[in-house]
Length: 368
Ligand SMILES: [Mn+2]
Image (tube, rainbow, N blue to C red; front, side, top):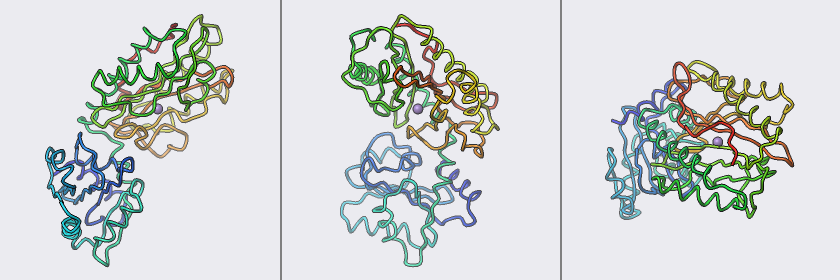
């Protein structure tokens, strides 16, 4: 019995009129993998392309995979079906889908090819129904095992963020810093970065999704680094903005405004509060300053197996109410085109009385 499967069906029961007989989660080819597969199987190692998980309301879990992944899959606690030939795969699928008239699928993360694969093996009268809303709600609330893994991913990123204070100096290039971030995270146990690192100097820091280039750091520039560690499939996501001195009044004002917006937003994070509130509080504060309209994105996003793991802090999230164990980023920013930008990003767990900070790197204004 897998408690995560039970939780998914409990959410389906709340969200839908009819509970499907089974839910089928299917991976296509990397990167078109449904991370829900790894959520329910808890498998930390292996790629599992073309693998399938079949979930039942009683919490039972079946996994179908090829011989290539048999060794990795044997570490899991579920009913394992390994196929060697296509005929064997067809037989296993027909057997697992036998009698299911109503089959739940994760429409948000299922490719058309795998949809047809499920349909091909289902009985003729079977109906495929989208349960992605319930999948998202389930994965949004992390259990303590997930939070513990996220804590390690965040610790690695935090240590590396503080390390950059020692080696980022005028003359270094953006891509050199990006390489150091990856190297230092992997030296601390990460399997790699959780996404392509952003390292932006000077005016480049005004582009929220900039890619590091052949750009040399000069005095009087912002140094914005947005990166994260991938650890046991879980992602951290941190942003620190330092200033290659001297710090001007303008640098200081932007930095302190973003820091205050983040502080105000963090005060609004607790169980029972709407996910729109922290964003609105941060945005209203920034809009009350000379930097009006320069905070151009949502305050944060869900974090877990994916860097954007469903849900977030933004004006449209009004109907999502914070629950204990939800994990989000909190990342206000101000972007001045042609000059530069500041973003400060931390990862938090929603708790009853306030946020639990997972990232711990220094957040005060730092001159390099
Ligand atoms: Mn982020």
